Length: 172
Image (cartoon, rainbow, N blue to C red; front, side):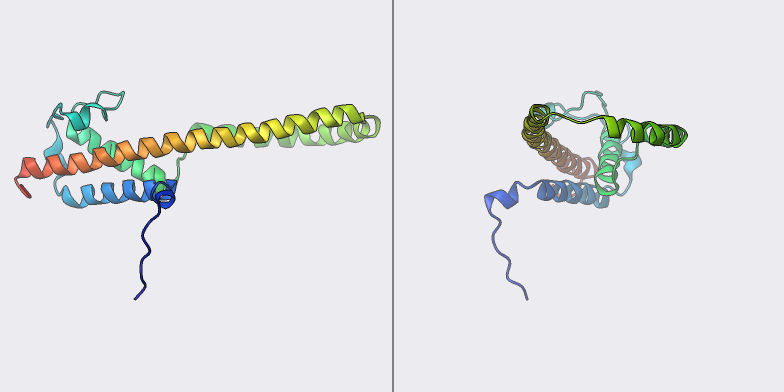
């Protein structure tokens, strides 16, 4: 039997733990809600918990939230598939294949004539360092946002589970 170590503050706030809490809450919701159709036309009560968690889409019944949460869980678990991006990627591959033979010939001739001065190279190195710092800030910003969204979604799933139990009359 393995002994579990207490979670440190850093581990507790990791993005992996936020995703696991969200997925666990949605799985619990999914196991609790035996008849999702019972959620249709059941309005979300305006209480302190849900007022800050409402989505911009202003979905008004519990069934819509149920479907939304399950869809987001699938996106988190399986990844987001963007069909428009896939079509553009395929289109780009066809265009790049057509242009590849022309670009090979032109790059061979330009490579022999192009050379950067040392001041231009230093300028490019400075830009790369700034881009690296900017990328790190962007990643931190987006991870913080993702963690906040996952926390709100986890609360939504827990609230929906609680409301379903109240509607059905179990666990009061």
